[in-house]
Length: 520
Image 1 (cartoon, one colour):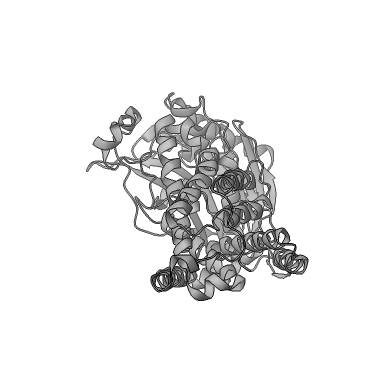
Image 2 (cartoon, rainbow, N blue to C red):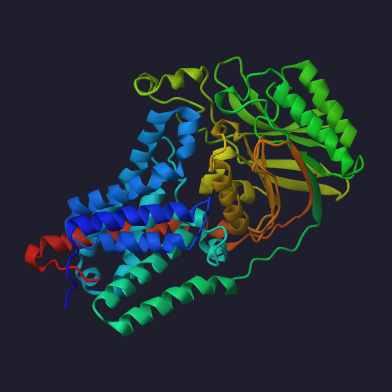
């Protein structure tokens, strides 16, 4: 017997509850099992047949989730842009609601819980991938995988990347939803089977190996969180203050190590507010610090070419030599580092005029070759800058180019005391496991951390403090399946999801509306 359809009011209640629980799955507080319940409630809320209604349900779920997830956007750019971004992201959940309605109308999916268990995650991940790509390069911040940094499922990300991890969160959520529906029908056997299956999926991750041992030696690194004199848009208001703070932090490393003990010193994105390649005084100060610790330094800076625009750049500074290698951010943040549709954007926020020179994208992977005299070889440093950690291809290309560790250089000063920094740290942890690389997230103001290849955090700083970390990182050169497969899992999911939606739509055209009963 088909399950009775829930009332419209009840579906909206489920949607709100599901979105709120999903927010709790992300840092802070990071209660990762809440993601399963959030998806389960969305699955139950979408049991009515109307694609239009389910689009509304998806929108409501998204509006209960995204504004609370990205409150830091309000801190950084203001109320209207925050609400606009939240609404845009919620629109993708609305799209998912409609797409799932069409996909479920296919004969096999409509009548089989097993097929629903497969198709629901496929459609969800395909919509996640679309949001991560379009428009303006996408905004992948709320992908389900990024809620699972502490989850037993995390190890699976090394097999199929973020798409697989998000899909598994959906699988567990659908199983819980199916179990709840079966329980409502007094089908104790069905509810028990679904519950046990969900538990087995969650526990299966402990069987997936996540090697952490060094394969090509270790790298001794010092990381400097210098702090800034202010917060928000005024964080860089005092010329040279940020540079001075990071210089002081570099000298402070000598309280923990002797000169020459470190192979590399890491500064964050915008670690210097003055371009040392254009300012002799800044260059001299940085070189003095590099000579004092007797180690090369990876320094985040901004370059202003004569042709206009600017570049967000990370430069490798060798003592007494200067810049020997560099990486330029490939994925500047739209409406923050550059302003698309500036005339239209100005109608919503005058803050767009604070960006007087648009940031230009780099076109090379985040790979920095470090010549190590101690190891007697070139060590590959994979580096990404700030929000780039959220983009699969940017991080993957750094590892494929030869990165033996990952460095996430970021500047979180404009986001105040919000959860942005710890959400970014969760992404860095997922990336460490995805590619099997020790990772350092280094921020101007925190949270900075040292992360092992299995995602474990071994050192961590607090927000808006000056601090330093010293660590010996395992160098690894083998590639995980996720690194090797690249974007293929995502493309396969996209194709299968489109096929499911199209097949369902075609099937619906052949089925009378009175026969479109939902199966739980």
